Length: 385
Ligand code: SF4
Image (cartoon, rainbow, N blue to C red; front, side):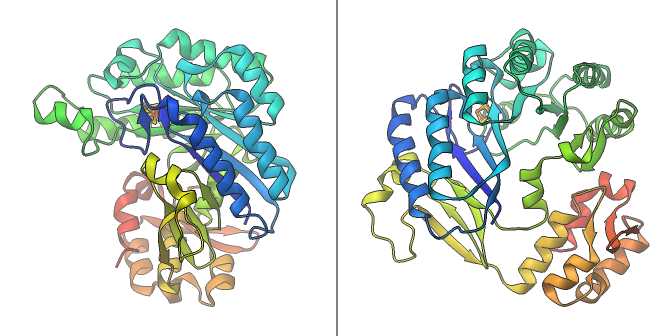
């Protein structure tokens, strides 16, 4: 165990593209929610004995919580678990919710990394997405974060937006690089069911850019960002150096254990994955419920077979574009070399030049080629039964 994810499922308003587990207009439940979350943390006392190296407040919009509430959650983690002195503590912040005093208090509480949901520096894009912030507030959020003492900033940007041209995307990338932030996460817009965007598309009110343009936008980022000092280390992520790569997310990509807390949170503990009740009322009512599985917060547990774990190791690890999957680590964990576990799949992927073997200190690593990065989903499909 080395990582804790904490889900804060509250937002001021639902963005048009969003299908995350989050609730708008339910702010009056925050107090009860946090009480339940603190109970859940306590319930894991004594069960999590390894030191915790990363904590991630995700959402939803964690920055809708008062800073003193976030401080109380960190204090509870310290009280019940061993939290490493230099643990990476990240909080996702929505630019429409960040003031300088809030960020200063957050920094004091021990949060040392911010992931800001900027999405675009263009007001037209932000309006199309249904975000609560504008470009000016995006810039202000970054300025305030720096003034509050945050030295590790990550920005999220989305490409492939309705009406977005390659030039407009390029302008966003340039702006992000000019700001000199430490980390960038770039995602292509995915149209999810049951979102406002899905409804608009069905009603003919939304025109999305074609696949070729979206691929060009991704390639532009892959080509441009290294020239500005950002290394591509995961399909959607770039960092200024190895130490600034997301330590928390690398726990997922290395297929290691993590504790997920809060409504709808997912976790991986030992040979099982689990997810918590995602409905707010169900989660908050957990404490009164007897549960034979040992945690009243958990809605479902799924055992991970050896085969599942090997497939996950490949699908998650291949996302790491620089390091890929270490054959030595795979062998230590499962007792087989990668090629012994997946002979047909690896032969096919090598033949298609979607993957390559690269030399590392601990021996060969299998990683995506440029072509494999562009067609990642086709590669991952090989590791699904
Ligand atoms: S702020 Fe994030 S979690 Fe909240 S509705 Fe928008 S995209 Fe979804």
